[in-house]
Length: 356
Image (cartoon, rainbow, N blue to C red):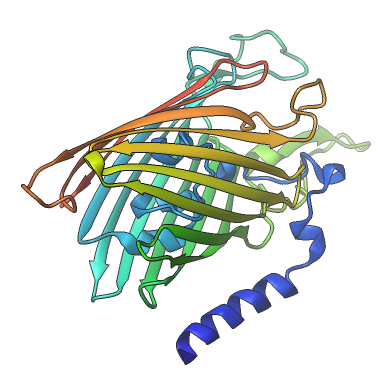
């Protein structure tokens, strides 16, 4: 009991000492944060919810929504997911795709160690300058955006689960790059006769500011004496897109055909944009087939003031294929998700996870 009390105390203190300016939605700071790829959910399963399953996320999928859910991995889990953002790199100029690979391994009776890497691909983009604005005149380049995550999650009891994720962020081109480090932390509380009620809190992307450097930040000029000198820009530091999620989930269980209906609600406080909240639902039958949906609302969603493409309608489905008779902890799950995007083509995600 003392251990649980300490956990709750630490989480409460963390939320209390976090500056309000970081946690409150601030529209005046919109667009001033960097590393926006940290806000892209690469996992197809939780994308079908609209990333609303903070209270009941499970397995590798929990890396994005609430790292505490990683502690529910039974033995080993491997997952891969591909997301075609805004129609993919061929669908819309500026669109792209993400690929994510994850692995989780149970260590001891209560802990799970996991890691995953996500990389964004934008294809070949045209190099343009103020002197040569025509596309194709100077060739192309391909930016690299990647983040590497290493996490540990622990089941402190059958009701309390917590986890921490450390991520290394890298953004680069051939002559400019930036590297940063961020921390995620989360906790989940499960209660009820059949563990049907779940709460979750996750704090994401806490870390120092990033800045770009490299030869691409320099240019040559001739001074008044006719000497050629090289001048380097000093890039301004950019903060990370810190967010706080608070979620709840409730399972309605039906014995016939092992049916389950789960309702979820979530509130997200953005440090550099407007806050948003959402509701979602998932229906499962025979522990084999699942369909889910979610709707994320943000102020200005239905007019020209909309500022976040991830708000709106989301849907997804999963098929669970067991590999061992009467053992649902081993098997293959195939996930698909669809997301609407304002003034952009829809985003599609497909992924698979294997538990063994």
